[in-house]
Image (cartoon, rainbow, N blue to C red):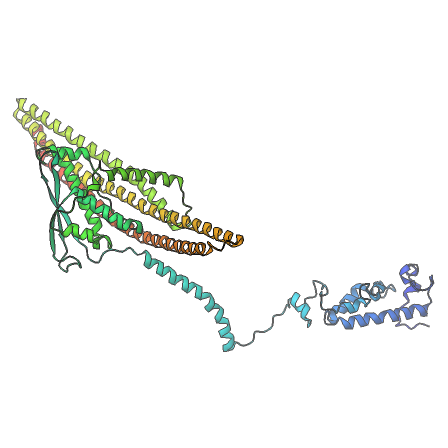
Length: 569
């Protein structure tokens, strides 16, 4: 008799299981049917490894999960059917090591796969590493040691920021434009002609003031010297030879004009010919700006050649190389042509973004100033033409007034001719201001930009010398290596010495390239700062001249209004 609490045997109630090949003993003779006692004992014996496996993997599953899994796999609704999972595969031995499969699960690698619903934290370190816990652990109270450990990464992270700020601050200090502490006040007040015929030449009076506090190297407070145009060219040549290869921007002198100077030499005086006087005045202003730019440079103003130029009260040695048709002039011409071809043929791969941007800025500024300078020259020409047309109109109006019989009308014509004459003079004066204030300043800066490009080219030449030295060093090393491999020891000491000399040469040229790059940065910052000052001052002066001209023009026409009303009455 079977008790009421005992479940019906699976083998007698479910015939399909009796026919299953999995219930047969694989080591004995085949069996087709089982008795109730045999089925019960088989069920009891099969439940023992399940319990053993469950107890072995208890760290992986909790009791609730295990019973939930059992309810999912075994039907306990009392219908008499039991869908039991196959147990025999769990008891089979592993083919690799012969151990049971449930014992292999406890090996440390790899961890058993866990279902997605198993999110309960366990004690197995392998599982806790791969499966995070749902409920976070309460944070322990922070101690001074933990606080210091936490703050140490922040300090370590803030260290590069502090060093970056320090380096940026140092870079800003290096990029600050430098100006001389003491400024010389230089002016070219007048010029005169000396000599006769083709042997005549023009001299310019250079007046230099050192200020009330004085300047080191200048003993007196006031200097007045006379200098020829060739002296200015000689000064520029000396300064360029000493400072251009170091990255300093040397202001360029005015360009030579053989035609204008020939007219000045052959003319009887500077006031008789308007074209000659304009040429000489234009040259005077250009020379004055040239020496003033040198005086604003902190290095060039302390140069001994410049100091002798403004203080030595005697004629300087004649600079023969500055002549247009001299042998030195021909050499300079061929050298400039060679530099142009070198710039085209040998291109430098610029790795510094700052220099690349500055070169593009200089090129753009050069193009913009050329267009503006052409427009200003056209404006000057139109104003001069307008002044000439106004003068012709005044003469015609005066002739008409002299022929008019009506007294009131003749008086009005005469007043109109006088007013137009004043307007013409005002237009001519404004044209001169446009030329000397605005156009000449633009011309000077175009020449300065050419000097800036020359400084950039000096850096390119320094880089070329450095690369050539590196190539030479590579050849020397290869030659020394071949000697060592071939066993030629007689010339090996000489080859080693040549390699050592080549290495020193490379280091020197690399250092020179770094110095000129650093100096060009300073020069560009100083150039930009001075350019802003000059443009502001020039623009302000030009706008003031325009405003004064327009105010004077209004006064002229307001004075003519009563005469115009007298015609109507």
